[in-house]
Length: 205
Image (cartoon, rainbow, N blue to C red; front, side, top):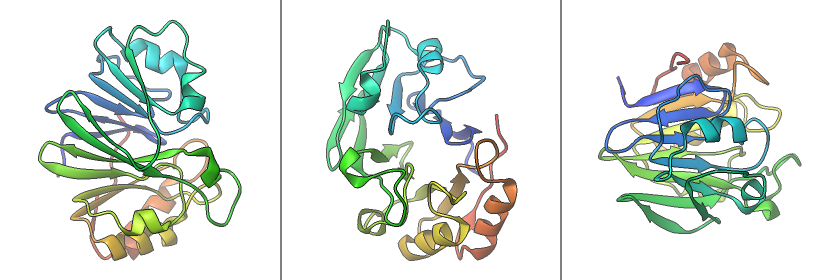
């Protein structure tokens, strides 16, 4: 049981421990202030000015893509523009970025430079894949925990997500990108059935 990873619905997570980290906070109930906020790209289901505002303090680092940064208004935190294939050390947390994109659909073009993340956190390497299909970059990550989208339509589907984790072999996988805009719990369950590793389906918090 991983008790420091909290699924806040759809593609939003909160990590608790050494720091409070939010990933793509949208329509979240938590108001606990963030040490670090990560924004993978500017789509409305990943970027929310309202949600970022309510969890940001003057000391919050906001790592954000340039197209998302242009939408930030009256935010008091410290904004860091990010791009793929870089390493960032933020408040002692090592965060690596890689490109997150579609290979067989047009919703997330590679040239947009949208982001997935690998975080070194609480003694684990954690993948947040972003909105993506299976890519060469994803196939080369080495992580302990993989957070992967499973809904299909805009991202990889459950079968493809299982194929990914069966190849990269993390200790644990957690599905997301279902339950509201697109995808259902059945996608998460199908992913768990097809994966040859441990899968934990989190309750929305």
